[in-house]
Length: 227
Image (cartoon, rainbow, N blue to C red):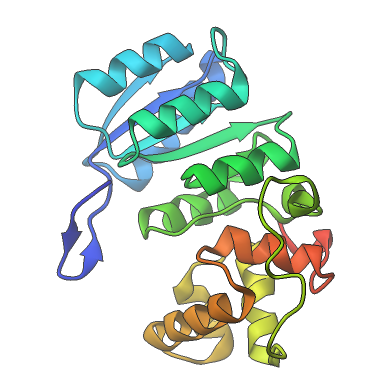
């Protein structure tokens, strides 16, 4: 992951795009190149080549197809996360299950997004990951933690959620960055971060994605809230 600069993470300088479909690979490469012109972008089309590229040079960000050739989906991504824990890894897929997404987020996945996500939402996801946040879409996480291998220590909330907490959960499910949420709530970004930390403590979680999943599990938000 990029080193922090003056307390903020530097943008990624080395990116790998791994997808078997040339058009998708080119689209994601062009999208990242426009977002981070200084970044070196490497491309590959299978899981073995992805591991080779990761081992050949430092990498800040990996965007990988969940169902690439020579990969056994969840097991392969779990292996990748274990070997390259410092790389911000994002998977995109048409077929990943809610339980697999939740499992991989628990293992250190930075984000998961569907292949039909629009460009605006994709930009938000990349912004979140670049800031060290996690993301998974609302429609994917709905019910995920009912089947995921996590302890249900948050079966009941110890504290009542405030209206601001509910706004945070709704915006988290949409992949909104702190800057946008600050505009909505008319707060500073630092205050949004403080409010998010307090919300995470109430829910017994550490990440946005887990917070959204728990919110779905408890019926606090619905699948229609996300992109």
